[in-house]
Image (cartoon, rainbow, N blue to C red):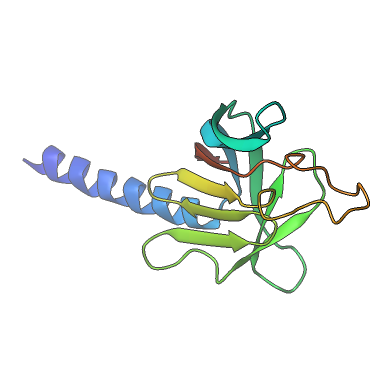
Length: 144
């Protein structure tokens, strides 16, 4: 009976440590699947599309005095600020060019790439219709 109680107590300590560790860790997040819309030049219309989920993201605590969290897509230096850090239920929200939400308990994320459809060519050839495709992506994260 004593060994069972010790085993339960030890497990509880490790579980508490692992969730505390996940609160303070950096994370890498990798896409599983993505769906959205692409422009069909032949029909001159937007169509539903499946995309290859190949994005990777890094989530880190800022090192300057801010103590906030930031999101970066691997290979891109642009940072998206994550306001408020992880909330009571483990959610982290990062909004900017990307709308990103992660949960540090399920270690899953969802991101919306909303730009593209609402942007039209202003007449000077700056942005071609369909050059940017809006999509929704899901994936999983791991603490680093």
